[in-house]
Image (cartoon, one colour):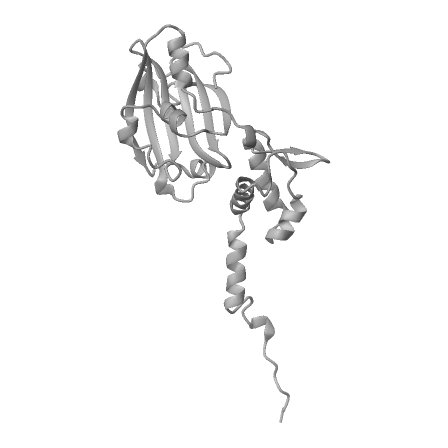
Length: 259
């Protein structure tokens, strides 16, 4: 008679079982590069990392936050692309001085440009809606509540002629007072100039066609007409506020830099 005692099959036992293991898995899932980035931005805003100062190394941040170095690298690389930090080999990562000094980025540039040419400035609000932002736009604005990101469109006129089409996505959690009722009579750039001092901005300039930008009808031009596009993302301290795509009428001469 075989009296050998069988041991439990450990290989068959479920791994990472129990409440503590479940909690560990939840932590691991939460530590995406976006969550690491939000923590770094929060520290910049609280001046744990003041403008001009070096922040801890990738290795130090990874060890502190319990994540892979590659996760920290992606978070910092994205912040560098946005101009929030400056990265140099053999030196480290430094918080950009622009985050301290800032500039009046919300000044009404289009109004100044149109009136500076001796033409009459005009503005027309085309409406707004929530919930239309793509995932990429939500990431760009670092928005946690998709329903709070509002898309608005507007037209700028010069002597009653189409000058520029604006498509804007705004994190309304930061400026809940900037409602459609307000924008019906005041353009967003003017309102922000009066109410919020933006501190930092990403600006990209490109060429496209009116059709590709879905602006041909608003600009009253052909679908294939070539247009200049300014793509901007403006920040308040360490938080993106609004992303705007300006598409200029084909006959408008854009002076660079405009913003």
